[in-house]
Amino acid sequence: MKRRTFGSLALGLLPLVGWPAGAAERIGVLMLHGKNPGGPLSPQYAPVKSAMEKQGWLVALPDMPWSRNRYLQGHWDGAMAEIAQHVKALQAQGATRIVLMGHSMGVPAAMSHAARGGTVHALVLLAPGHVPRGYFTAPQLAPVRESIETARALVAAGKGDESNRFMDINQGRQQPVITSAKNFLSYFDPESDADMGVTAPRLPANLPVLTAIGEGDPMFKRVREYYVDKLPANPNSQLLEVSGGHLDTPQVALDQILAWVPRVIAA
Image (tube, rainbow, N blue to C red; front, top):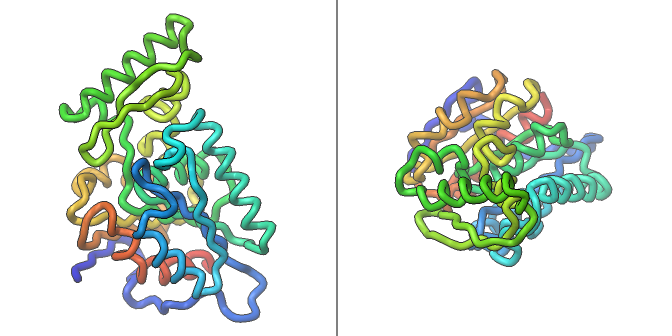
């Protein structure tokens, strides 16, 4: 299986260990799943969650507002409030170091939490997805751009709180979104905190970031330009290219994740 790493750490040489026995610190991981039809029960997450728990880490995998069951519920600010509450719950269980691990839509959510000053000590960003800026540059995503423009017009007309039908495209599949124009824009406007390129330069400089992207992922050739090159310089940050595609990246990159997290948390 081909893997390539970028950055200052040779991930393959790091031991697969959790926090040293008897240490006062404990790692807590908040896993943020991908967008509808994704959710916490998507099969790619269970092996990852189990492997991290075997390291002695506390792991939470909640149902977020962009899941199949809740899609898209409320405003982006509400999603950020939920993340903060889940972080507090991990801390209440004894976690002293918080890792946000996002997959697909979970990536911009994790980045937004960090950019807003939320508690987090490392970011693991897997198969980044949801690209508001891309809706204005990729012809195949024009239906979403048109929905964004419609939502902006509704807000300007004083109708931003009324429920309407908008369009999303996820992994090439169109799906309707029934919500208000204000709520839709909070997730889809290119200038919002839901865009990875907006939040990347605002992340704390001391926050290490691991990005993993599969060679078969639609974002493979674009991820550097979209946000990776905009991240503050950090010697512990990594861009990891792996085999596979969008859905299997969490499992393909698992060994590297298990190695990288304790190393950067201890740094």
